[in-house]
Image (cartoon, rainbow, N blue to C red; front, side, top):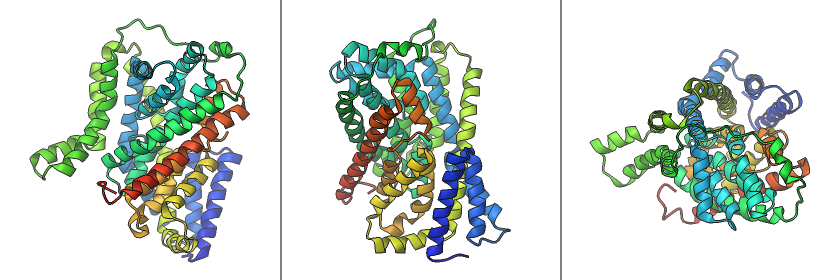
Length: 449
């Protein structure tokens, strides 16, 4: 087996190979990750007979934690979107904030919506709202694009049950309920700073011509012929899985062990909680959904399949790196660098995010390497995980599909997208890291830190 600094050299070369395959040769991330995992294991000196097992175990272990949840989460998001619940939630938040602070309301909407719905789908669903708000208020559409986009990506990167942060919580050994609570504490200020305040700032400095011409590029909303869902029901369904998971966490903290905590622990398990939520949504939302359920299932399974493959492959690559002993060597090396562990986690995740164009892959890879070392590094699993998540928020570049969603549906040029979306996300990520450090100051007083 390779030892010492050669571990870092091989690791960096493996990352370079991964970037080359995905960015230059346009090989699918799943194939790229599996290929690099196998080749890296060979160069690290793993016995050939052991390599398939290491890769398969890493793949399977990752999906044990999040595989069921990914499938259920996508189905849940499809049901909420098809029923009109997403739009109702957005309207309610915007009504609460008023016209002048509509962008702030849209940022908060992004935080809520991106909990069950993936970034790309959520942005497309709400893009019509961005256009209408800009016309109604006279505020630059760049402000609303930034506010919505940053709100969505912050939650996408920090709040389970989105797959990326879910894997981070799993890999760091953090309590999921506490991870959600502290994640929200970090996400809200980060969204307002990077989305609302920066969005307002940059919106006044970017001129976007022909906003009215957006109708041709935005999807036409289907005519609603069924019953209209209420705002209260929409919010209740969104809150259901989060509430069940949080109930389990609160119960463990405040109630003695017994039959009640056992039952609530079962109901509040992340897989069971989301399964219950999907079943409830299937029953309750039937009058509001005009699309056949079979079509929704097909779309959800198509999305879930590739996400699961990439998630598992990221875990396979992370398992190879972790088993190589590079983690222990990095601990010694980092101590000589005198770089704080939370900052290191942020930087590592940020580099992968910018290079690979995938927040999920960055989160999986970074947490697979640093997560098991949380105790040895002397870091709280929750804070270490949130620092990793903060690093995956910003620096979305043209190698990221989300970049093009914002570019197309925001009707921005590439330089404008970089100014509004890429920089806005980076500012939000730094703000989230700042909140993580603030939480660390109170680690002796806050539970789970």
